[in-house]
Length: 172
Length: 191
Image 1: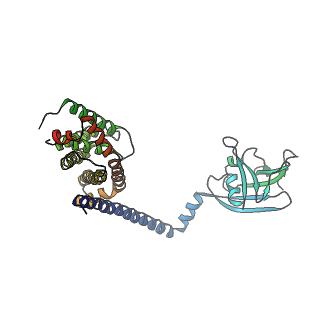
Image 2: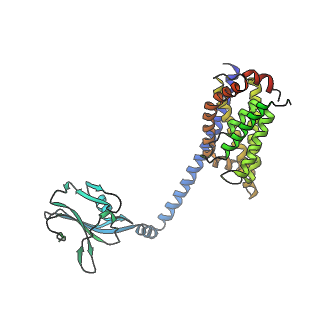
Image 3: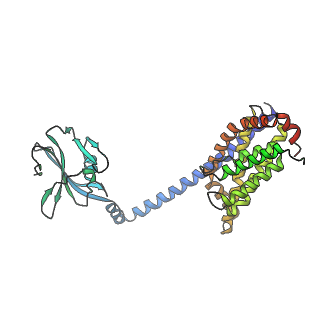
């Protein structure tokens, strides 16, 4: 190999070696740092079960959710744990085995069109309800389930109902 | 030192203005064209002017940079870019105005190397600031180098491609502007 070319190859390899060493050191230190933080967190949580429980409670909520298929088939999902800030839509999204929906965006939000294979048609569709403990009755929020933010201990229902009767019959 | 012709002074002025203009333009961190232009000026006008331009550009940049006042880093940045200009001058002397297509690879590797040297020098500036708050010298230097690794990587790799892509066409254009490679060899190499 020509001497000049050899010199530049060596120079290139030198740059690669130095840079590679620096970057490897950087990632090693990052790895070490994150591992220490992880261990500290595990130690903290392991020594304080009550603290961990409080932490999880602080960032989640429990809700009772009824899924009514309109043919007397009803399924309750009691004490369902959801992330804080979940909406009625996100609750059914996580619970349903299959779900279809249309996102109209903006103020209109999301409309659920099918749950577990039961789809909207010209006479029937999926509606959702919220249980009002003060009046002990089901309330019918007439806006998107994606806009309805759940609270701790809340009870909601998704029902497959006929449009022929309005307001539709409340869940029973 | 020979006196420069008017055309050379005009060219140096334009390159200097371009250099400082690009250096002060907001851009992705550590992607820069100053090294290339300073190196080019070094190859063309000699190591004294190349080194002087590099140091001056970083002096101006230190005060007017969109990232803020360079502070303690300023002298280290000046030294780093001074070296780029000087090495450009040395490279110009060894090449004596002949820059074939194959020199792209050479300059790309030189660009990488000089960028790494620049980064090590400026990181030493960071290490000095660590030392001033009581950290021992070696941990301070290693810490500064290692913590700046992602930035160095971007800097070195980007300069590899900048030098690879731009040095050869720029030398062609400048040679044509000044009347062929003989100009480089005969008129400017004494500096």
